[in-house]
Length: 185
Image (cartoon, rainbow, N blue to C red; front, side):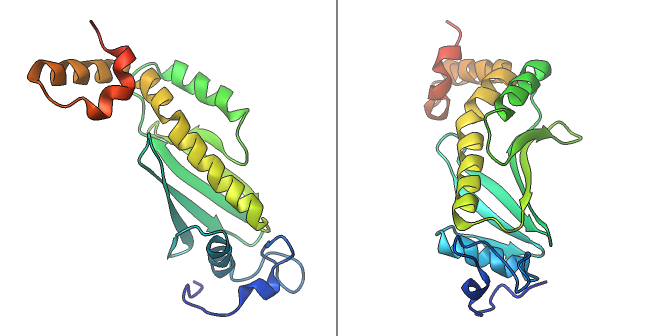
């Protein structure tokens, strides 16, 4: 594992766009340190955990998206949890996710063996700073921007039940207001 506290100037091995390169022009051997340096340059807070860089992206609908960046000699894997397995309308949710994939940059929606929804991507290791920034922006835009749409399709009954339960008891509806159009009369 590369020491995340290494103060070696990693920009000497970067090309003009900030892409990680070794002396031979390929991905650097210290993929973690190079990736960490790139994230520093583009102003993204992160933490190195074992062989992965963890980035927490703040949102407005989905309060935070944890994004894992795992460098390999010839690629960079990105993975972000978006939502647990829908309770209902699985086919409609999956169809919507597949259609949404057509408009995403560098990542695509997928489900794991339990049916939980993730954004994943496999990109070249030598991403320029601007491309890494764009990739993280896409992860945030998709996970935060699509979150309520996924909930509306896959958790409609639960949202309606929760709305009714809170209304009947005079409880706060603050975090459900965005779903007021789904409330039963």
